[in-house]
Image (tube, rainbow, N blue to C red; front, side):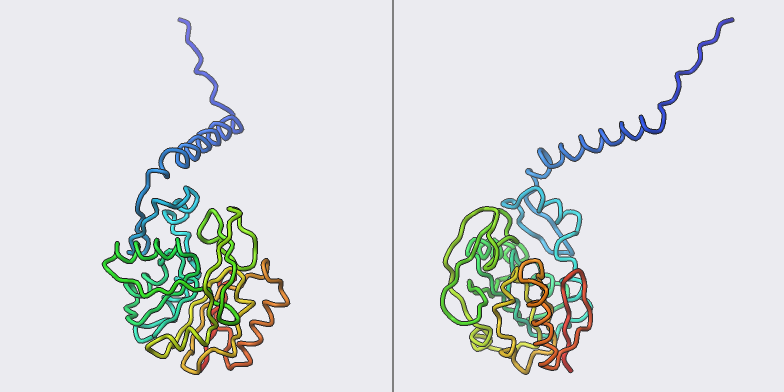
Length: 253
């Protein structure tokens, strides 16, 4: 009786190669066919219109990788009693997170890109809310500034050239001017303005503010300027309570 030997199993490197080829195929399929069809994403209970976003941005949102540091610090240190001024609101996620998850009721957002403002408003409407948003850039003084607009909304910057190669003039206001426009005294600032923090006069932070969540960008503004910002806030009585991936929490008693 003749028996047929079983075929040899693929060796380890062959199995690894096959697995890698399969993963590469799945990734290409996902970014070319699956993600372009995604219209909305829900993150932390917040519904977001992602129809105009790139597959890369949609993927980050689906994986929960968007604004991780800001939302972590907000969840741990902000309360429903805080009154917030957010500068650099982007598509509105952090504002909606603070209002829907943390219960904050007095919340104003500043966003420089007029196109992003419209997306922010759509996201608020998706969540049954009306945005209090001002289409302004935070700058050292009132006036106008040139905003460089990238292919991704988070590439908008007053500092660096964007991959989209476009720019637009937008109205600008100092921190003191923004605070004067509020109908409440803010207790917390949330700032993410892609390097433009170097132009802000932090001496204008009102006495009512005891919490600042700010992303600093040493690759854009240099380490020396980054340290100067930290020092200026320390001189105002703030202390660094936490740092998460370049996003700082400053507290003042």
